[in-house]
Amino acid sequence: MAIKYTLKVLTDFASAHTLRDYPGACSRMHGHNWKVELEVEATALNEIGIAIDFKQMKQTANEVCDQLDHRYLNELEPFTEINPTAENIAAWLYSEISKRLNNETVQVSALTLWETERASVRYTEEN
Image 1 (cartoon, helix red, strand yellow):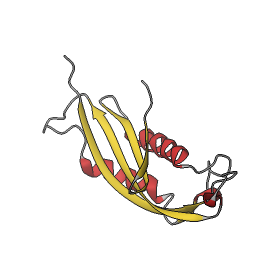
Image 2 (cartoon, rainbow, N blue to C red):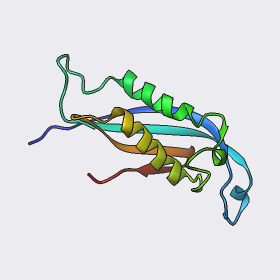
Image 3 (cartoon, rainbow, N blue to C red):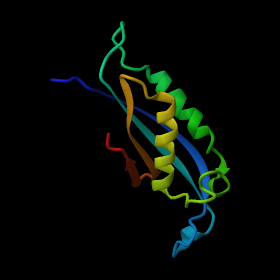
Image 4 (tube, rainbow, N blue to C red):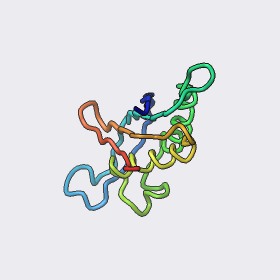
């Protein structure tokens, strides 16, 4: 039986966006205090019994989220071309964090982006 550890950290950022072609109030500029839940899966531990340091996970998530923090998302790539929906933001965050964290034993497994206290999207990719 293969072992697997799932680790999770939380971070947040604030930004504004406009949903192009949306049939309602969200078509006007508005902001959110987004909450980000990053999950990684690990298949091994290092010599002191750690899969990946929570500090490394949080630092990497913060570095990526800082690119969006206190910004108007519609002015940033790739959101000049694709709508800055919660779904698209979650997929972008997942991709950018994965580029920095993934290795032989650790893989980003899911990213949940909370737009409000009661609305979120969870993004994953099949391996």
